[in-house]
Image (tube, rainbow, N blue to C red; front, side, top):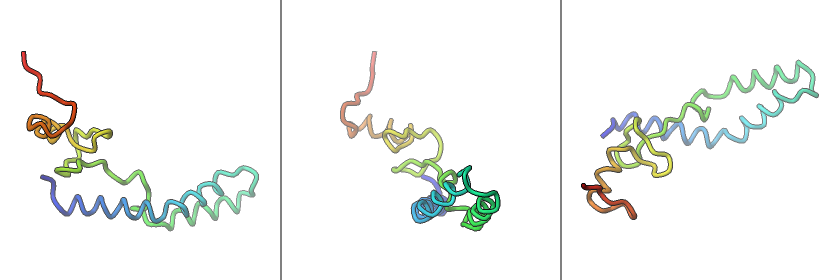
Length: 101
């Protein structure tokens, strides 16, 4: 099980990324617009830099929904490989059976 503080910090980053997504997208559109003057684009970049760092979506870490583990994460299942193995061996994952030979 991961530290609660690390999981909470990641959840806070998810909330901030969602909150500032529209503002960040609008400023990025202005900054990338070649038809605008360089001064306007530079101002947009400065405003973008003033936003909180944790509001950037790249700072969000994929973590297991069951244990909070950051490594060995399957996006499709939202869990780590270890949690997936434990749940599938208990028969809790539909369609997945333990292999034996």
